[in-house]
Length: 168
Image 1 (cartoon, one colour):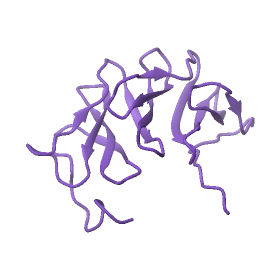
Image 2: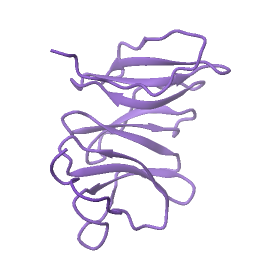
Image 3: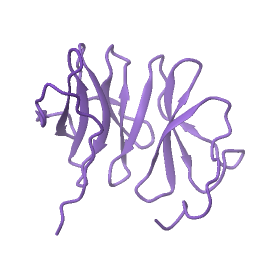
Image 4: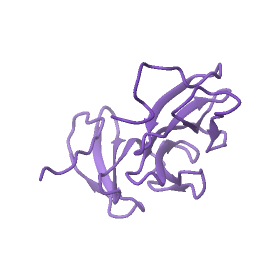
């Protein structure tokens, strides 16, 4: 990868709180991540070209009493998918890259929806849904939350969905 992330590793965040689950924007200029804010996690974004400080402050995108984690950039860099438990169980949300228009796409009170990833086209999101017991399946839906489809329908544990571009 060329651009802002070339060179040796450099610590970007300097806050004493834990910063976890980094996601690099498609153009390599921004990093979204979750940060512990006194017992709940929120989504932040920071420029990838310099350590956090007076000229590069992490910008908080979410602000509520729930846990917001696992950010994933849309391929065009305009939106982020993430996980939040602000309405009970963990659901998949999307928001604009500036934190506006936060919307719940899954609305499942009795299951945990985790690990959202955008399709290469940006038209779909895949994620893991934990069912009862030890079962979990991989689902996909349109980026607006419609057309939910269970891709695995198994009695085992499925996890960590990932998209790859279709070979030419």
